[in-house]
Length: 250
Image (cartoon, rainbow, N blue to C red; front, side):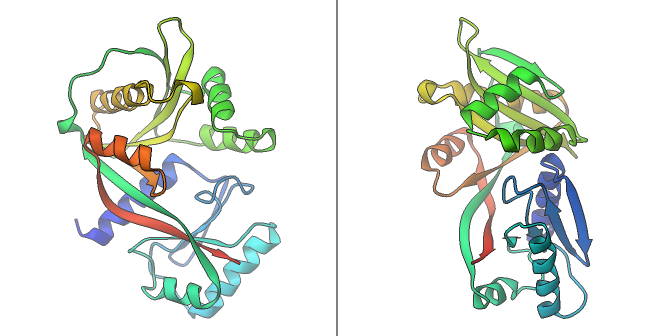
């Protein structure tokens, strides 16, 4: 598989794993809308060749987001079409932000399943959702949108909580399996429980769940500024395959 084909594959998997509330296809560009909750779910993904003039395409996309009172955001990778799109957006005053590393791990490389106190559910669970929103500071206005996004996931899911020995939740995360890949999303550890190994236990248990359910590879996305997370994923054997970034209309 070529680099471009691989990027498109992982990007498509991640869009399915974190579905927007509405998706519009404009030529080869994918426009996603989710009431403004997260840039990933409210941005333009120019993954495939488009038809027509670039200037007109950009203007038409800007108008669609403005009508919904949303900022105009492009999510770009090395597979973006056309190849000069990033420089064209830069010339139009779009800011460069949010550089993110996309990393992959072969599940053949994971060690033994670690001992941990685990609670998991294959559908969105209220306990998991409440802790995730609290730890990740999801405001009440965004919680209904997030709940709809989770409920729209069509692939196999595992909502997992790691607790201490007394059953107190300490970390949570989501695994989504499609086409033999498990995507890891929404990994968060309770603030006062950080640096105690709960995040590592969570990721390792999700990886084993993926392997037990016929996944062969894992992928995740981590912002380059998040040095502790980058160090953890490197320790677990993840390797960067490509990066993405955002262009946001000033």
